[in-house]
Length: 386
Ligand SMILES: [Zn+2]
Image (cartoon, rainbow, N blue to C red):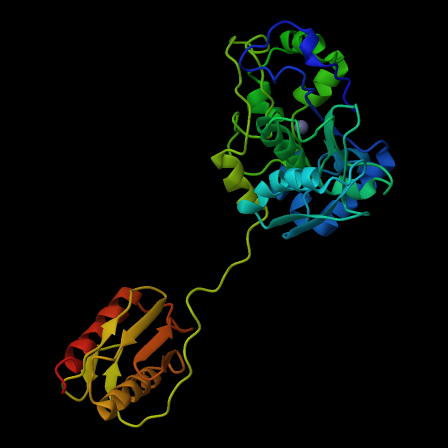
């Protein structure tokens, strides 16, 4: 838990300091080794990507005791995150909805939904005077249901919007299993331990041990994804020039940045939506147009007009320019027959005025642009028909 004192009793903040009066965040570990080992086993069950990578095992070339292994394990949820959030000390739906709206910003790019749960949510929010803190991802499942898993000290409707962005989004990032970005070794390397310890003692009353654990302990292999360290991440602390070797501040995150959004989209990818509208039902007709994909030769009645809607995975040919109903019906049927003959059967459908289709299975080896050019050649012929 935070050892944080309020910061407003201190010297004026530099631009890189957290705003006056705000405690900084502490990521909370499970209390006992037994808890940590059990949670690590559950983490790998829920999401196999939580396990340390094969490359890592190759590096250490051996076996680790369970306690150490637990520390190396990621804590992300399964591919789709749909979590209940309960509030332990408020029923104010205006406040609850405001907090959830910021939590759900993660869902703009990831497959994530935090929904209000009257009780028993996997995430349990309190506003105790113990700072800002959260457990990491599925570690929350190890916490007794009468205890909070995430704390937003004193958050109310009077709290500025900028703090909702900076703090609520950050804490729910932890709830999603994202650790502190400043614990990437590349960012730790910019910090001077003694200067940082002095600064965090001054600002928040932290002990050197807390500074070591919360800032200087490098992330484990299971917690790092293959992205570059990001000093603007919402998961990165702000450090003033008083903390760094160079004297330059580390900006830290005030909101999700583009790299955070890209990252969450990779860790929790959105469901793939099938492309294009559903094709219309086929209409039976008779007639014959012959074409051969391999030689790109076409045999068709003269003078039919067709226009493709767009090039791409989904194509649509407008036959409405063919005034004669009988010829139009035959044109569509003949296209369909020809496609069947070319082993593309069932892919193209006719609804009276339009032939539409999607790229069928088995056409992966056919150049799609060539195929559309081929269809265009058919249009040219149709356009001459009366
Ligand atoms: Zn944090």
